Image 1 (spheres, rainbow, N blue to C red):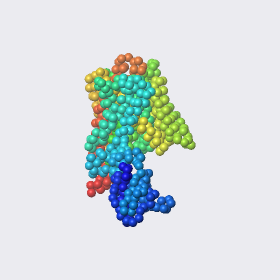
Image 2 (image 1 turned 135 degrees about the horizontal axis):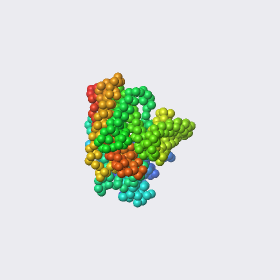
Image 3 (image 1 turned 60 degrees about the horizontal axis):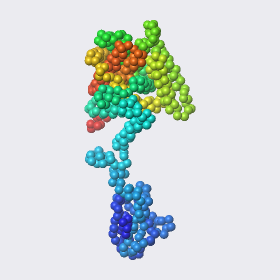
Length: 590
């Protein structure tokens, strides 16, 4: 017999006995009278230990063959009876296997289909073996995909721009900043903190951007073109404003009415005025720049508040009292006030003309932004039409295009505040008509935010240099932030104190949850400096812009992590647990 022959025992009573797969060969003897037909064939397939062969007549019904079935699939290799087989001793030879068949035999020990999925009680060795079985799957497959995408994010620009995508180039700095900030944000959000919501990813992104600008040998962010940085931040601001506009719940705003309006507006205005007044005394700001820093600091951060509230909501805290809905809607309104006021005041500062023209410029931006936003929002009610196929794609593209056009065009005509306000109003008005159909559009912008969030916070962190930091600015800036938070907390508590919708503990929680700052500060913190540089402003104005950026970054570092921790720690103690979750906890304890 040749080296490729496989002997299989034959018995008259038991029929053919096939070896358990993947055993390569089995030998033995049989006894009986007569002999098998020379042309009898056996089809061999993947055989499990528990599988049993069965007889199947051939097409000509002249003889029987054995087909071994496993999941309905049959291997193509054939076995035929040796012509020398006799009644007393016989063997079945396997035809010559192909290279693919041999390779399949060798690879059976590392294929996932030959092993059961590991359970929780299995050992670490079993779980590790499963992780590296072929084909790649699970976390290993995800890691490979991420590495390929990371390489392509550099490889594709390099194939187009060549030197600009190499170390020292603008594109290289942007790509490394993006990938590093994504990794830093993921690491920070996965730090295990028992009883505390995950830290916001923006914190890691901000720190990584600062490191990539100021640490020697890895300071690739210094090679990023300032014009590119400014444009990317404006795009990121457009994305977050559009998301905020789509997410505004008109019915919730109408239902909560005066309590929500008083809570959101009073806290913003009072903190802005207090910060503006103290900034003139502590960091020598003129009144107009005092209101710039005031409007920057008066906005609460949805990026910190919303995930922290959802963390509590999933556990059943505050749901019955409507606390998450109240704070999320209030945060959106609070941000509108901060962004609108900031852009109006900044437009007045950099507008050309006499004092009367500057005074008119602010209200004009407000009216122009709201008017353009309403008109464009109504336009999106009817275009694309309901009869068009794929209208969700058209809606997303048109909304994004119009939002970007408003942002860049308003900057070109020196009405930057009108562009930001128009984007927000347009998205809100369009979403009113779209109703439930706005969800696919919102989902697309959420995916865009995955890319532009690390770019925004990374570029903000990279805008702060150690050389530009003055100890007096950092110290006085921190004190200014704390003073503003103190007045904000008092006003927030008083704004809901006489409300019968919340008990005393819930009112205390509302005050605590109204402290974190991050998203708006990162989005608009650097705009004043960008406009000062673009308008060739005097050195003292550029210094004002630098101080605004420094204090904005400092407010994020001081309030984002502490705010998230405070919400997570005080929520279970101050908020009421919904009855359905109470019954669930009792069942789990039993």
